[in-house]
Length: 147
Image 1 (cartoon, one colour):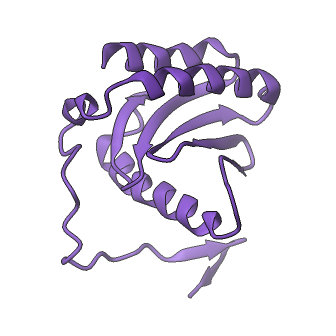
Image 2 (image 1 turned 120 degrees about the vertical axis):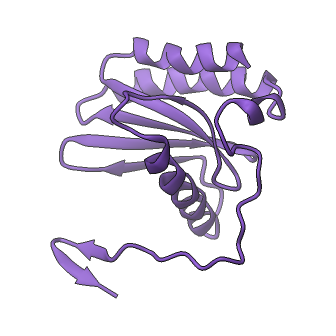
């Protein structure tokens, strides 16, 4: 487990990376290396969204890399069958360097025991209760609410 976390922390050696985390196929956050401003509660909401995004895009074929561009930042998702590595980076990051670093981390995580990662964060490894309805936040596109 510590080797996987150390590998994830190594991504910060690439200029422009703010932080990263690993999400299971179920949307559970397994590892994180993010500034303290990103709370566990925020990640608990983001994890399932990343999983749904990967699932939605997978209907179009093999999606191993997703880049979501924001005004000042990029969210880069490197997918594997059982997990995804998510990187929050500055807009100007050197993408070939990031891809090379993600390749190394991906190989390291493939060697890691994912079952051992279940104890890293509270609630990890538990299947979310799908019986309770969740209230989705309203969606906005270019400042206008969409339904």
